[in-house]
Length: 388
Image (cartoon, rainbow, N blue to C red; front, side, top):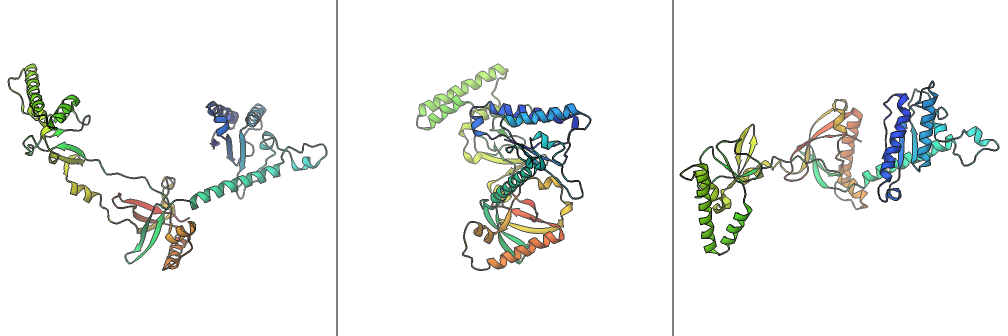
């Protein structure tokens, strides 16, 4: 378990942070096998070498004691001091050296000192090695990304090169069509303004006065399915029972004759698959769709990346760079990462072209805006290519 707290709180509340962390970690250890499977670790990133106020010795003692309690419970506490140019160097002796039980280098060289206690310089070297290890793991993850697909990158109408996509973007599916009945029991189109919804739970009759909702009945449907298997007498008996039920419903409603909607609902089982159509809502209107229309809507052209324009990198919003990225590299680089060394054709020229395009973006601090179709039939996306 790794926690990355943000020190954007008052210094007087600093001891409470370790108290909250201790309770959060203790809740995780109460699970079965948690102590053997979960490595508890707290990584602190801070540039403040004195988080507790100097005039509050109680807060300083409480924070030091709680941090030592975490270390005694087996929690690995790793401090990463952040030093910025133009600022004073990070002083470990102010607070963190005593809290992490570190000794000064000069005291370590004296006689009678504790040789097992790490020094400040040794701890900084340890943290530097740990951060390098984390950075190496991140870089290795980037190198071992599985190639999802290879698409052409169109830099201009007559210039393109193959690139590999090393990660996926979130899909943006089209509106799902609704299945409705568009014909009556005689396979004739319904009159305008009338439709029968066959998707249960998606519409209500009181919302649409001119529409009737089909409520499925499992027992009646099972009887009708058995009748279609060859039992003709049972089918006729089912029709008689259906007519009797319709008459009883009409008597209860006080109507002398059965309504046209009731007769239609009783004979829905007789409709064929050609009576089922599709529609979708757009602009507040119901638009009918055919299968050819659905295929045409999903056709955004062949897969590929098409360069549209280049914008300054400062104009891109910050929240757009925090989403799941799509790593793009050349096909030759992906093959080289996979261990293949047999290159032929124009792969060297393609790498030179891609490197020149990447260096131009970095030098001019630009972001390439492109149109992406990841695979055939997938929706089109507008992506920004950030040089790295």
